[in-house]
Image (cartoon, rainbow, N blue to C red; front, side, top):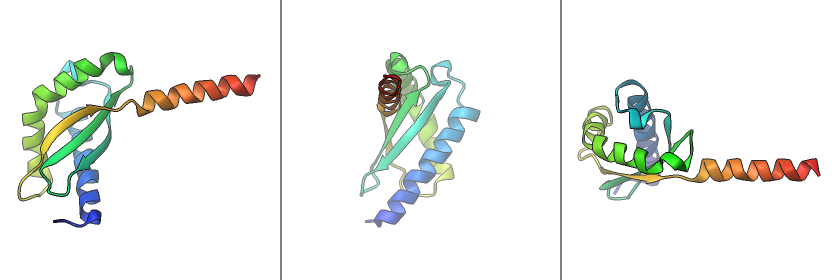
Length: 115
C-alpha cells in the first residue's frame, strides 16, 4: 500500500490534470464553469472520489454530475496517460456544497456586521 504522502501527491496530480482537461479538452457544455474542489483516493488506489462544484451553485448539480459520468471514460483514459500508476482508479463524482455553504456564511456574517 502506498504511503499517505504518496496518496496525497496522486490526489493533487489528478486534481491538477483533471482541471486542465475540463478547461482545454472537454467540449461538453454541461461541464463549463465547473471546478474540482477535492480528490480523495482510497488506500488501494481502486477509486478516486472527485468532488466538484459550479459557479452557478447546486442548481446545476444533476446536469454537471451527468456530464461527468458520460465523460468519465474519456477523462480516465487521458488521466491514466498523464498520471503514471500501474492501474488507474475508477472515477466517482460527487457534488461539493462547501463553496455555497461558505458563501452563505459570509452573507450572514456581513449582515451581522451591519447591525
